[in-house]
Image (cartoon, rainbow, N blue to C red; front, top):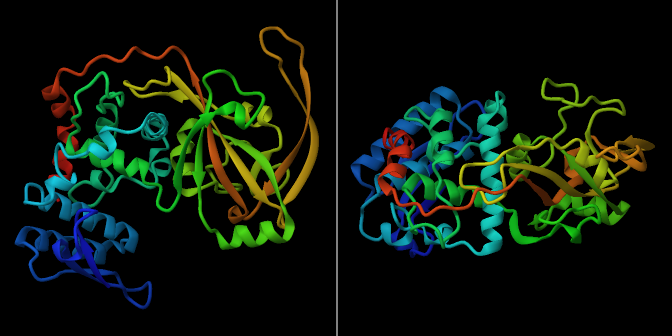
Length: 374
């Protein structure tokens, strides 16, 4: 494959050309070659990536992400690249987000922070930000945590519009869901009558999904909800719901068989959602909870189990009997996450002007050095 890499709005002639060799079988590793006009530093970085890929059998998608990160680092300071926001100080697209997208970005940062803080971060922070890989292509969790926690407030009224290179690249990556469009933020009352004031939903548009669309057309659909720990939502947002029945990652059992478990009642799904701490400059309070609002294509393999759950009314109120239906989806292709219902919890910390650029740069320094090592 001949691939042009450059600023998003640059003409093809202004892009660097690299070649990707894709082997016919999985036994061989993909390779990278620099085209004409590629500088020595970038060409050597691509050679090193190819050598590591051959030894570690790096997946092609990961290799391409690493190649783009190496090119961005190698081209920092070159004319034309900084103007398009590929180097320090040129991240207006994420520094000046609309109010709705600021809320979505705030939630996505919370998801990533919860994942990187978890003892299961190796499996939960997947996919991993490619610009925070270490010099050997490994995942640098400490640099990722440091970069996430050093992010300034997203409120443009209380901070200078400056992001370090690593912060800017990380925010762009968090908002790029690879084919899923963030449709904006709405009040959660549009999704369920059981939402509270301040709750909101982040709409997700998946476009065409042939397997889901065919099953929905042939068998119909139903609305259902899935609650999970906050640390799981980084992966859920980017990869969809997965079945972990029968594996070490299963948390709540599989009494009705293997598959993804959803409920027709939001309140029951909410009881399975465990809150997590936010990041230092979040406007969502001290903790956040999240529930996935889904559409199920009613394929014949999907199991349904009606039952009545008894849940505490809270604050000394009597138990509530909640009739609902469990849906067990063995094949995740037939469940689609349409929106994320985010439940802020706790009083937000008032945003403070960020007057110390040097302090923030120092906090993000470890993350920048990880990329420069490539």
